[in-house]
Amino acid sequence: MSRIFLSAPDITGRERELVTEVFDSNYIAPAGAMLTKFEEDMCKYTGFAYAVALASGTAALHLALRIVGVSAGDEVWTTSMTFIGGASPITYLGATPVFFDLSAEHWTIDPDLLETELKRAAKTGKLPKAILPTDLYGQSCDLDRITKLCDEYGVILVVDSAEAVGAFYNGRHAGSGSHCAILSFNGNKMMTTSGGGMLISNDKNIVDQARYLSTQARQPVIHYEHIDIGYNYRLSNVCAAIGVGQLEQIESKVEKRRAHFDRYVEAFSDTPGIKFMPEPKGYRSTRWLTCLTFSKEMKTTRHDVQKACDAAEIEVRPLWKPMHMQPVFKETKMIGGSVCEDLFDRGMCLPSGSGMPVSDQNRVIDVIKSVVDG
Ligand SMILES: *Cc1c(COP(=O)(O)O)cnc(C)c1O
Image 1 (cartoon, rainbow, N blue to C red):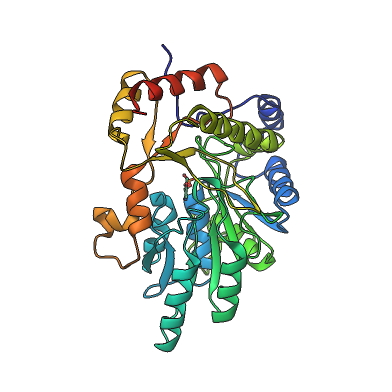
Image 2: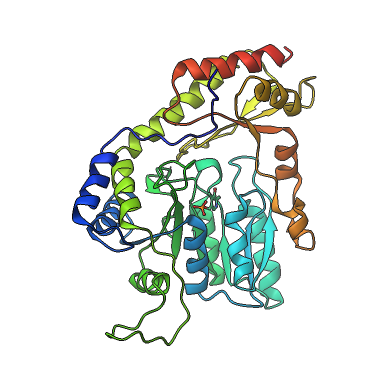
């Protein structure tokens, strides 16, 4: 039996043809026409004015935070329940993360907690340098509330939309209204370049800076001249070709993941103890991964389901282990925590790749049904 992955790459468009075009041009480099096209296409799709393609989402976030001015001693307020790549760039800069709980209504950073803490911090003159919400599992954060709070307190907003290419919030793409947002094209994300990321912004200066720092901060002179320390963070032109092909199909990729989600919901509609990740009105989640929880009243736990799926060659995983529960962040401040701790305790994500055939999904459903009680 072949293994069913959580989110396998789905390469069914013009990717191979576009990569061949790159080979024919001999621009096998972190420069070339495909990079420009990829950035322009992403701007068109997301409605952002400027974009720079980078080696990873983590690299994009590192640059984003550095460019908006995060430095040693600053606080960055972010989501506890996230992937490590969404948090570690804060520490690369010597800044201090403060982790926040999620709202149970949308599973993204709780705007009420943010508001309370901003009010408190403003009084003591200790506002964070930036707020960094995560668009968890492809659901946009509450952009209206958060952009309003950031405006009110003069705090910079950077959105981690790594899982949310194709997510919309009241008709605007995820990350809209922020100073800048970052995307990931890792192999398991909504779309892939085999590995890659992007920084998108309506601020030309931010994207120009990112382009400059991502190519070793070279001054525009013929000899190599440096007045800043940069990075080698640019995406390759070859990978950009894969990205162009993937982006052409992003809408159908979102639709396929959403259809998987709907099928899972339907399959477990007579199991009241199983609840799925909510999607409030006005949000369009990418449903990057279908997430569910098992109620405390059920005999079945996520560990039972994990065991059964492991044995059946099906990759399932718990939801992200919150950052404040990670040994590496054990000294870090946490605001609230009961929502994400509970989700980690009882939650799970299921195979959701846009290329997953329905027959594979049925295999997943059957295995889970064979272990859940009532
Ligand atoms: C994947 C991911 C990242 C990091 O992206 P990479 O391209 O893997 O470096 C950051 N944040 C979140 C929420 C992610 O899921």
